[in-house]
Structures are given as structure tokens and as C-alpha cells.
Amino acid sequence: MKVVLYMAMSVNGCIAKENNETPWSDAVWESYYKIAKQFKAIILGRKTYEIMKDVNEFVKIGNPFTVVVSKKDFVKEKNFVSAKSPKEALKILKDKGFEKVLVGGGGMLNSSFMKEKLIDEIHLDVEPLVFGRGIKLFADDDFESRLELVGTKKLSANTVQLHYRVLR
Image (cartoon, rainbow, N blue to C red):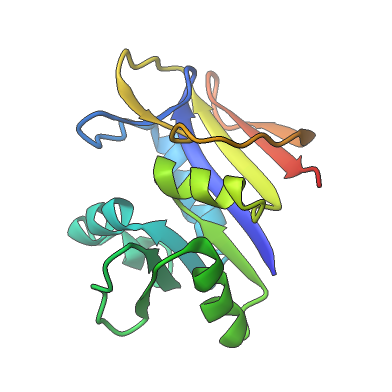
């Protein structure tokens, strides 16, 4: 199964402010919707799921089958399931016949997937913002991965998208 991490971030690597606010430009939101709609399955952390649910974000990305990784088994809705680990989330999706999945954050989930070497590609939309405090792209953990730049794309006058392949 192909596993793709997609995130928008500030120049200093924050995916949200401390209060979970994501002040991204229209260009980044358009890019996110376009990429997310290409996936029929998405994996999220619990906080990201709750934020997206509160603002009805799932409709905007085509209502993908969603696996929420959480220590608690709390999702009991159509098209949503929970898993206790990244590997369990991938097994659920593989058993349902999905061939590719989008990992959509947050920082703790991103780190757990990287630590277990489960990410194949990373797409990063880099906004011309700096947050003094915020949620980092990857929560502090013990892992290291080398990446190969596959491509770059200018989303607007000041925003770029970076596309990386994770080297094994």
C-alpha cells in the first residue's frame, strides 16, 4: 500500500498554532482539497479528526473512508473507524482493498508513521509564515529518514509545495 503524508506548514515547520489554528492561504487550501480528493482513504490522529469534524471538512475532501488512530476506541460512525496504531490502521485499509492512503496529521501521528518507516512520500505546502509557538510537523521522537526531492511546485507568489520520496 502506498502511504502519502500531506501537510501544510510554516517556514519553521509548524503545522498549526498552539491553539490548533491553521491560517493557511487559499492556495494551500485549494491544493489540499485537490490532493485529498485523489484518495479514497485517509488516516488522522484524534485531534485532527475532531477539528475536521467540527468544521465539516470531510465533505470538502470527498468523504473518504477515515481511520482515526487513537488509544481509545471512540469512532462509531459510517465511513469512520478507529485503530490503536499506524500498523493497525494500514491493516484495516489493506483488508478493505485500498491501495493508497493519505496521512493527514497531526504531529504525533506523523512521527509515529515515520518512526515505523511506513511513509512512502511526503507532500509539504510551505507557507510564508513563522509561528513562535506551534505544533511541529513531527512531534519529538527518536527516528531519522532520508528523503529524495521528487518535485517542487509554486502554489502562489510566496507559497511552494515540496514533494519527497522517503528513501528506504
